[in-house]
Image (cartoon, rainbow, N blue to C red):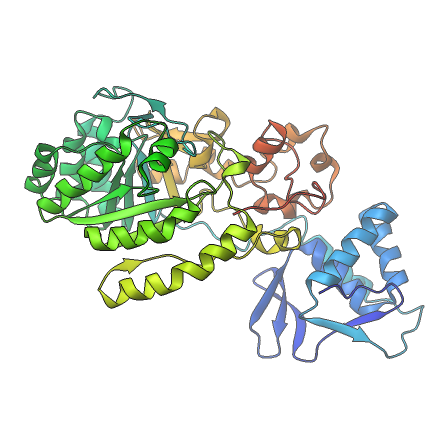
Length: 471
């Protein structure tokens, strides 16, 4: 709700207060519940707005943060509008000479230098994603990994050896890693994939999964069953052969995927599916869901398309009209599946709007609780940046999980000062909010918008005014 009015003053609603908890600023409820996290600069601005007339608040913000009048107005108006659920117009007379405590203001600003991200890195990675290869028998239009196309089986000599992989999985179990994902490319393009899966079955005590779009013959599935695999996830984006083949970039692929699912069910393994929701297949999804229920799938999962640093195209994002259509069609089917003992993680999707950028621009999760391991054993800050050496922090070929996770190279990735000089010549380099904004920046968004990783995040308040954060 737009509530900014240059002629008004503002106060917190009666049920809220400002406070500092664990060295972080928050809007708190009167009972102490953390309602809104505020970075130090935002907290300082709000502190001024609540204690001064608005013109004086803007003047003080302008002077101390050394912002232009236009930028000051932009920040103040956006802050008031975004916090409309927590603040209200104050009609009481406020002295034009009134100022908040100088000491209190400076205390808030001092925190800017020792800014502490409210997201704490876990002591161990809770999840590890292994990308065993960068080859795949499909050429999907949306592939976030940008996998290379190959119909031939191969050995990936670059990846961690089977012997070393066993050592890593044993370590993962011993230190308490909860989940592991085996992926690629497509792991089933590897002729020795069964060796890796055998190790997972015998030595990992947590939850793990393997997913494929490759063709699995009856013999392949029998072999998987014999080594103890209980379920397999198959990626399928449509039950319309033409749409499915187009999205997989491989004519005849749908027929192979369908046969793979039949082979899985024939051996009484649990069939799970995952579908990427794009503009190309969204109208096929109700039919796909119905057919997968009847086919015998036990788990029907969905992932909304999101950008990556590789094979990304904006047209793959569904339109708001398509989201609204899907939101109407899917809930009855999900309830029907539930009544039949079939699980689905389908969730409704809100329309994408510019004013929602602040809500959807969340803290980056890189190196906070998950580790991504590239096809050559390199450990990545983000699996969508798998092609960029700047974001590599060690290699599991010659280091343990914990050594890599707690290494200085890994810590650098979440240190605002580490890449700071790379921003020279950009708005970020001279921005007073750089440190506080750092944890919400997305290198992938920046790369797709400007062709470089080290520039302003287009979803930042100082970014592109017409940018809509899609998800």
